[in-house]
Image (cartoon, rainbow, N blue to C red; front, side):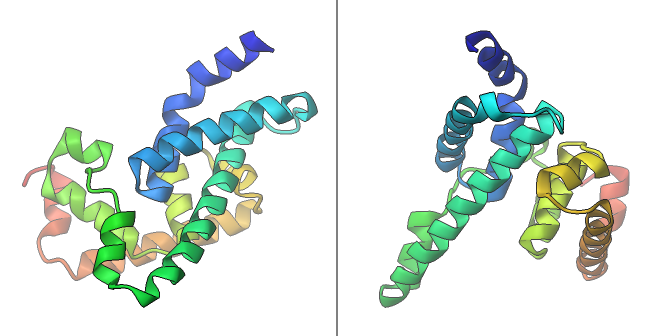
Length: 181
């Protein structure tokens, strides 16, 4: 089991961290959640039936871990209603830029991430899995426990939402195509 665990960790750790980071937008929490994913993998690997690939199985576990964390944060955020909302936002928000922002440092890329914030959680998950993690529609459907049709519909709606936002930003679309800023 140790060899299998080490292989899964080496092969998928970075990608799972990135996926979780996009989901929770907090570096420390994403690191903790990756560890939670691998704890669940250790506890459940014997029951893994191989009906899906290890990759989709791991992403599915990561998705559930992230959803649990987001629900817990939502309940915690409700407790802050009695306090100054600005103070609670500062406590819960990660101030560090996204990994791609560190590499690209282009305003147009930051605008793309801002656009994604306007999408629903389901749409964000599909965009991250399909376009950032480069997973197929089939793999995305397995991870999300959806039909391929639902993935396609959600992807279409997410792109439509991004297009609407892009249309409101004069000149941004040309910058993105040219890669200039």
